[in-house]
Length: 595
Image 1 (tube, rainbow, N blue to C red):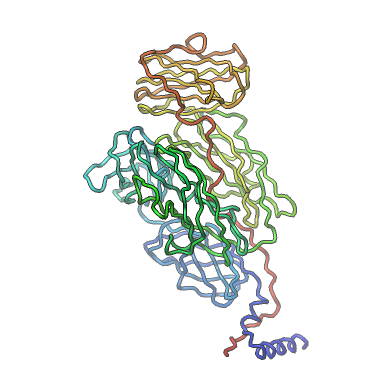
Image 2 (cartoon, rainbow, N blue to C red):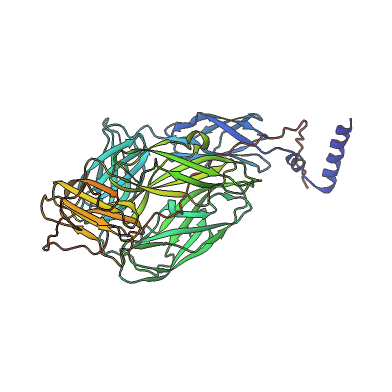
């Protein structure tokens, strides 16, 4: 047969020119794809046998969870692989990789979750806060049961603090770090009611507000584009935070590397922030990264690598995150989000809101496949916006209209972002974002702590705000969009007097309502935006209900009125639509040529 003669001639030619039999076979092999893993999770206390299903598998594939290569792998056929997940892996959700002997890679994002049978704390956001005011924090991990409790312990000293705890679900908790703790680094222990527990050492830092320190987070070690591909050049940068200081710092460096932190990893270069003011944050300049193969990589950024800056804490300057590099794709154009709304209102008295989104994928794109929603809240204790909860990737068509979203229980303004991806894993360059102010029936505020709410107001409209104390002494501030040049309207009566501000907006923009704790207080807030002279709120006439001249008046807001979360965020790998491989009618498995 002609096909047989062709194979024989190829064999002879391969031997004559020194080519490997394997390379001839690999050139005709289809790219593999993964459709499912069974089971898709397992405990790290014992080995878990898994079956990987897909297509295009051959030879002895390499299977990895993130950067962890699995040792026990067997090929059943071109559609099934048997593998064993060993005990002892770090609990988290891993991307799954299958690499054929020809180096073609299939990726299943978030393919397998390694869990623990007892509670496990993986991370905190924020993981630091000032010593002089309370701080709301989020804890993330596994197996948080109803009745769970959180304890803060200072390792060198027998100081233990039980925290007020709210369970969001089995993987997220909320807690309040009280004011007045001794500055230092604390362990965090989570305990279920069955007495099973887990301690994350050195998990939370309490600092003096005057201390100068530089730090960063793995979720702000970002790449541009978000989706990194083999053979392309991505830009890498880090958002660096500065918690204190008195003078502007010049030429703040971050040294980037892959595999390990500098100086042991493969160095990519230095990113620089030319000027970094006290109590601020900024992005470094970018460095280039051109990975040569798909797979899982660990990126590192070392802040101030040459120790040129004196800091109160030098142990938090190494930042890392895992990045999944995808293979080349025919469609490299990212989709974008065109519309994003929360049911037509910028404020709500109920935590459940509905999200509606419209996204598009320019030709010759493969179409929008997935959405991801991210909720940010502002932490006064940490002095930064915190990405506190996200949805993970959701199927676009099933979730783009009236998606139910439950806001985190803390009162105040929340910023939400919507990201889109296509079937090739391309993620929108920027999110579509908006804000909503959550006003529960009542809330509390600590001494010298503020709750921030925002409202869009047109010039000539009237914004009316009223604070009714339940206990303590809360004050009311309303800051205009041009707060740099225009003072706020204030009601700061003493004791349990009702505070109110009624203001005909002089300019259009976002007005910031702040409830400030002159003392620790519990309160009720009501806000209206109406046509001029239409208020139904307010206990007094004119601009304010009253002023207590004996109280010091604040001249800066809790949060700068133009401050919003950044758009640079490390996102999980977007789902991939498995390509349909072209099965060959005849495959060549040829021996290696040895010279």
